[in-house]
Length: 394
Ligand SMILES: [Mn+2]
Image (tube, rainbow, N blue to C red; front, side, top):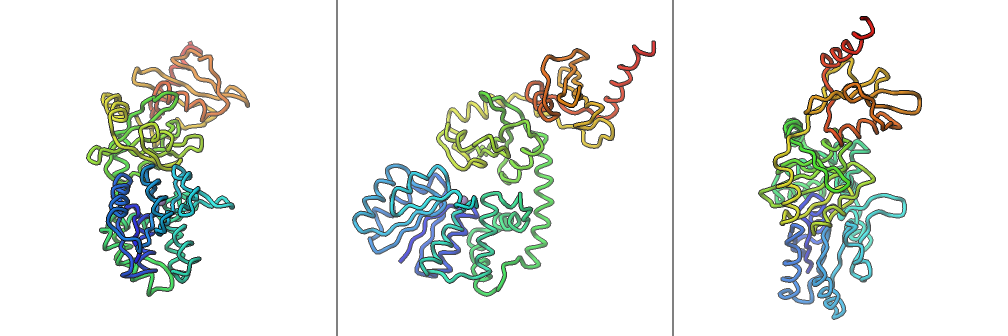
């Protein structure tokens, strides 16, 4: 008999699906949140007998359970933990621990890809094209590689996962993977996913108008409340506001905060770590206990949302050799313009600022971090230029 304790997201459930493909009724699968795993492990060690092979995927155990599992294993118990979270790397010291973030060729691992490799090399599962395709979609989604590769199938697989219950999703995938040569969505799912995409787009547009900016130490966070679509939201808001180091997404009902970043110089697992959480460099989370609540809820509650840059301009454009005009809430004007091939300068209300910038992006980043300024609409830009011209013509 086998028992699998896995995460309750797509990557975790991907492992459950593989386990059922491999072992059918011989395996019992339980999906857990990050916080409920340790209780399950404890329960297993106290109640289940030694003949059950325990697998833990996409999650890792706390120190106490690490010790308990080590003893269990020393006494002949069978256990295998497979994970790809950096925060679990220390478990590699055990025979039963395999934690891989990326392989030698730099390919990022996911729990589902590690488990597939495990099951096929140990001949629990025969390799098949459709299963390999499914595993690759899950891996690309979980590691966010799909974005770079523009692999929308991976994103759609995750969307489908959230549209169905876990049981429905498992059942559909298992029957498809055992009967079809290639993995694909059926016609009904395609229609459903199209509708869902429209919905996500509208949701993100609305959330964009609620984002507030908060300086946390040397970093700048964008904070937003959202119950769903965290990954999509973190990604879209991050790209919309590259001057923010990371996006904090508050789920008050779930009493959690998720962190996302699009930047390579930021590791959000460290930020979550400060509040007792964990995760990946690009996606992490923690519980909203006292300190996190103070910083991300209380300190940010009275802030006004960031104003969006004008979108439909023809003249006041970013990175323009004519310069770009920004404004802040105090009605200060900021004119960001190239001074020569090497640098950019800013005039605040016609007064030249001391700082110069190597690129337009650096200058804009400065404006947005320090002044929360936004790109004004064309009419305001034209007015500004007219006012600049007047003294000369007089
Ligand atoms: Mn994962």
